[in-house]
Amino acid sequence: MMTVLIETVVQKLNGLIPNDTNTWDSQRLFHGRGRCFSGFEQISVDLYSPVILLTVFKPLDKGFEQSIIESLKTVVRQFELGALQVQRRYLNGSPSETLMGALPEETYAYRNKLKYSINFNDRQNIGFFLDMEQGRQWLEERAKDKNILNLFSYTCAFSVVASAAGAKQVVNVDMSKSALSQGRINHQLNNQTTRNIKFLPEDILKSWSRVCRPGPYDIAIIDPPSYQPGSFVADKDYVKLLRRIPQFMAPGGELLLCLNSPEKDCDFIQELISESCPECEFIQRLPTHSDFPDQNANSALKLLSYRYN
Image (cartoon, rainbow, N blue to C red; front, side, top):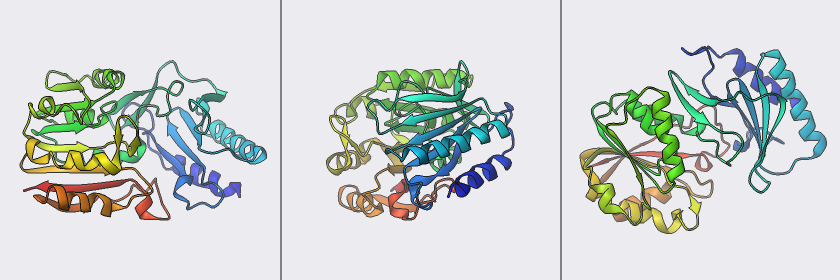
């Protein structure tokens, strides 16, 4: 049973080519959550060079978990990596523990020539979402000279990509001041000016005048949490965002609407758009990244591209 895990991880590591910083791009090495590997539904394995991160979402049989850990220690030794880290998401606070080696003083997610500061120790989400790569590529292809709105920006990974691609302006909006502060650091890490980058610590559902003021926008990315009481609950709040599109979008502008909820399929967004902003034309659903195979495509991250006519 353990063979499929190790073979998948080793095959991916063997195929990696160092980037310009002599590190490997961050990526998912094993995606059990997509239910394509029986018995491994509650784990994922990620590479944040030189660290392998094992994430456990629900309690495992102790013997089975130890077998996974010992197998990954073998991989760390084989590829001369720096550390094996485990995060147990089912425990309060999602604590993280170093099982082998030592974490570098500073840890990063790498993407081509870009890097993002991450932290394994003090948060459930370490600061960078690997499954959003298709969205970053989508933005990278069209960001040059564009005015861009990044709603629910978190640590501003989209903003860093847009800046590197030559965006005219990026407006990052998030309730979390600490996430936006990390976003500033991410721009600085990549030697990017922030003169044309705005960081707005706002409750998006209550601060539309400040959000709209730097518009109209040529591109908007809307990437809310699916269920975060007190902040955003998709069932009742997503439609409130979509109704506002005519207030901030330029004619012909492009939107990327995101939804990371296994319980909701693409129809959820498409029906809301049809009702609340019929001026939006559906273009495509971005393909799921190959690192995130899923038995049910509707359960995977949904990235829908629209044009505002």
